[in-house]
Image 1 (cartoon, rainbow, N blue to C red):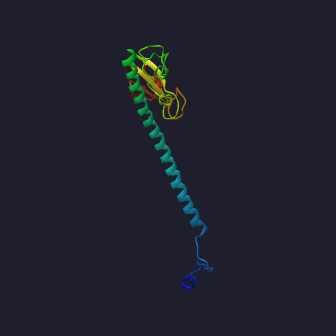
Image 2: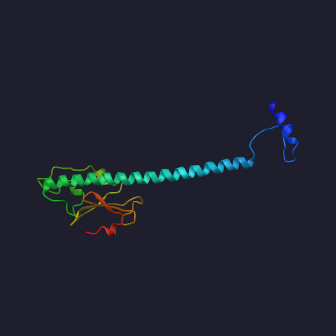
Image 3: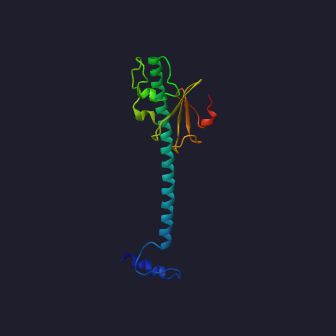
Length: 160
């Protein structure tokens, strides 16, 4: 066999031991597993971050679509829905002969995480608030849109 000569050659050194079986040492296996574990952790972290970023972008697109339908509602009704009517005014007739909706499907009134946008009619225009990644309204990751544009991540700083 090819390894027999090599093994005899290695036995000349005190530190070399040949048992007739070649393979990886426990240390080598542990090092490889450590490297693989590190690579997997980095990949999972990057993929999770990418997914959150994609959902934020999807929410921005959905907010733009809601804004577009709010403008259509305004063109038909001569006004934006009131804060009390909310986005329900786009889904069902508030009792007007001018209403030509529904302007949105029910799930289109939700952000990318499936949470309904909060709607408020402000002096600056319609304000939509997404609950963000944690799906809890009123937290620091909320996304706030005024007239369809992302203006602030802090809902308290968006103002009227």
